Length: 102
Image (cartoon, rainbow, N blue to C red):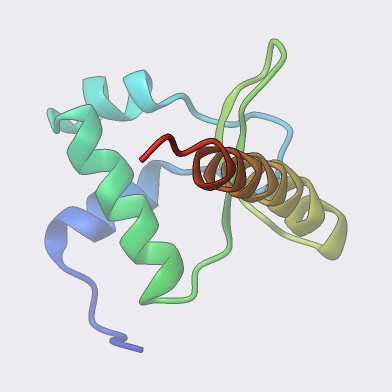
């Protein structure tokens, strides 16, 4: 784990709220930082995987956006859609392998 955050990582991290009550949308992060959406997503992924920061995302409903998990329940809320996405991707891979015509 690399503990030293870049200035850009610090800028993005400072905008993400603690707790799930008021998540921030990627578009709002873009407006406040001037960064491209793809760059923001890459930075958030890096903050999670390399700096072990518990950033979650709500993908459905009215209150979509990123948040920093403050308890086990919020962490589970962040993990659940990721696990569902993995399961869906694995089903797609299996289907492609099973239905290969060549």
